[in-house]
Length: 283
Image (cartoon, rainbow, N blue to C red):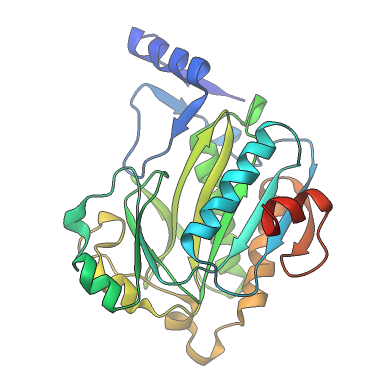
């Protein structure tokens, strides 16, 4: 990995902190001035293709249930009990605040969210506030990013790349914006990213709006970006919006290419390897 660090002592203490604690939080507004990563190191994730699993859920999953599954998979991956594993699912309506989330970006009270049928969670990911709901795919990669992949900025870049390539499959121009995370279109932000690394294994990840009811975003200031519109494939393509399974497959295809992991794909309500069955369905 080509990484250039400043020689200031601040940089050295930062590197030692990562090495000793092996925990790194990505925040949407984080841009450490003492750590720079060359563009060449960012894509692909690594040069040797690895096998991995993906598990898709056909019905929306409550946020707490999805988080519990992530935590079990995270622990199992840290112990090398499973390979890298990607969850892809939809959530029941929920507003989540990341480590940088501020209550003033919530435009409703707790009672008002409950009346709207929207759960409210303080999540342990990076980033600010966002909305999840049916019609939006959420990608939760549980990946070991050690060795030449130990680069949170490169991982962010790869998640953005997956979203941008997926947009390209449907003839939509997707792009990054300097100083902001996620994937954008001319109609607004379509993919939000917030993740955490523990012992260099990732959890949380990226949401991608397909046919979501975007009114949920009207109850927050999405990602703390005042006045910025939110888009979906439905708002851009109208009746030509692809079905959810088509977009799911596109996201997984690009994940496999960008992150050089050949995916063995499973459905949560189908036949799973015994260890996944135990972790996902029978904790």
